[in-house]
Image (cartoon, rainbow, N blue to C red; front, side, top):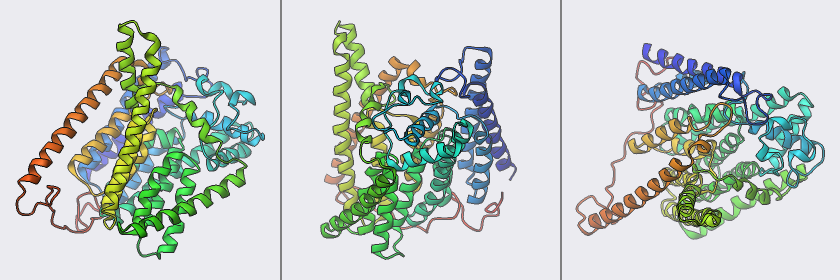
Length: 510
């Protein structure tokens, strides 16, 4: 009990320090769209508060996993950690101000898919980063509706507009917490682990609760769709409609959600037989399309946002693996006097990344189809597909990781997967400074070289694993399948706590 109390208030101290950093350098009037300067005396204080606050929050989060508390303790602790961030200015990003300006465009009757904030002009234009002032919105009609409601509620009062938008981000975090636990219970995972890894992650607290990114709402709706697909207590027809509605809403926020729909259809089918699978894909797709079409009609905006997605690729950073590899090739080209080919190197590397992404997602779906009767396998494949999207897309920001982290947190636990999820959540928390400046901008060369090293190591690991599995298959013994993988004996159902049964005396502490 004493250890858990210390963990709770260590994380709270970290959240308070992050709120201090936000007040110092993340206000809308600090720095012409870039946030306050970190070189000023107040900026140095903010940087120290951010570094120590993030460190304390990561430390408390990881320690909570080792202590394995129950869900009640985790929920109360999550609320305490979120409170300081909710009353401070948006931290680590200026996207909320861009959302507000997109809402102003929509509210004024201008098409946000054809105009940027500068065309109105938006009354809060100075708070938007210069790169995004003339860029059309890459978001779907549901998110445009949320932005429109925020501006209608707040008018010219920016704090009210931001408050409404942050409610949407907070709602997303709540949905992740609620449906993540339910998906874990249905897919053989641990609900408390899903709450800990998926909802209390520093990535969610900083970028969803504080930063208000719409990824959280998209992910919450995706999880709702996966829960509906997995819950066999409902009739297949009801599950199909619920899945289509949930994913239609999610896609109407960001197109990334479309990746999860074919996997949800496998859960609805419950079998790998092609007739059932194709029927489920068609039915859920139709329900999702109808939902999207309804939202497009209500907002007056349809598919114009798809063209705006290309504008997001103008920013070249090593946090995207393909972009980082292209940057590394570009540095080599500069050394040999071929600077004119640098942009081509990045474009070719990104194209290879997209082709690899398509192949990876397709293979994962094929693998999941053969195991469609096992919800755990399908959930793992869904999380892996979303991970591939995050790693191989032309652009990556830390909040893009909310989707794979939340889905994989609901899957059955393995020691290796937990280490990766914990490491990812910790590292990503440090990637953006409190004023919204990404560390990737300051570490281009070492980051690009890190990407090359990562891709090389991944290729070597995959080749060794293939060779190892081939050797095991050729000399397989008792208990080994044709794929060379031993069957695990079935264990008990998922406990209510992370690794702790219902009889533990610490189960209900708060």
